[in-house]
Amino acid sequence: MSSAASVSPEVATFAAGCFWGVEHIFLKHYPPSQNKGILKTAVGYTGGKESSTNPGYREVCSGVTDHAEALRIEFDPNIVSYAELVEFFYRTHVPTTLNRQGNDSGTQYRSAIFANSPDQLEVAKRVTAEVQEKHFTPKGAKIVTEILEAGPWYDAEEYHQLYLFKNPSGYQCPTHRLNW
Image (cartoon, rainbow, N blue to C red):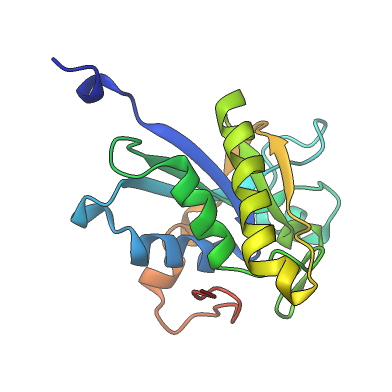
């Protein structure tokens, strides 16, 4: 067995506004059925207060837990690199607005990368600097995305999972589109 074939799936965790749209755009461009690297996703909550465990949607939306609505991606690094996923994350939202995506505002809608390893932390910082220089510095804009070590993850309620696939006419934040 080659060493490449024995690589385990990795996890990427991103927050970029309403998690419905974040999950939808990643799966639209990396559908698991087409073997583009994403194996499965889940929407949920992370980055909150240690004292707040297993938060629910209403609690997170109230802002008291400090959790972000986020997307957890299980991916095959032999097919898609973490760096590519980080760049795609930046392409598909507005990382220059603090705690806001479109009309959605609050800390739960912040732009954040939750690194699941020291290597991911390094890659996230490098790709962020590259994206800043290429796409935002020329516009006079500054990326405000938080880059943090991943903490506890809590799956969102079942009705949030794959929401826009189950409800194609459901609410989708207009910032969740390809920006370049």
